[in-house]
Length: 156
Picture 1: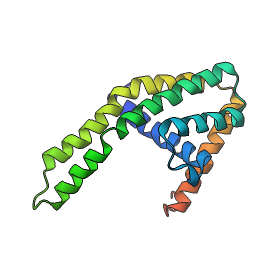
Picture 2: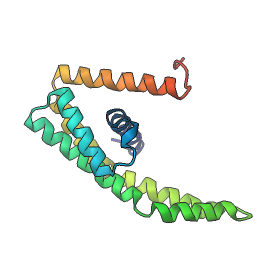
Picture 3: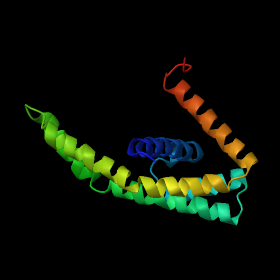
């Protein structure tokens, strides 16, 4: 898989998982830790798709990948935000440093993409046809709901 394809896949996967966590968790769960959100999402998906023990294990491995990424991504967040705030108050934006901050975060995604894609593949490949249809329906519904709520039109 090309590097650009991996990046796109991870971004889409992250967006889908964030949507799933948000949708399953509801607005009241925004202050949960990544581990709490992953546990909650895993429990909901397990019930909704009626997962067997192997599928639960595959989903758990995928959730653990996301917990690790989110935990790492959050590390140093406050310091980064303070640095960005400082940059914004300067007469001239330090574009090199800002680019470096962005690249640090994207490097995390790039480094983790192969393992996340493998975990996602293991989980999706373990689902039966009905479970995949249920998952596709859910993702489609959430995508349409998101577009409507955020004024993105009908996609045409």
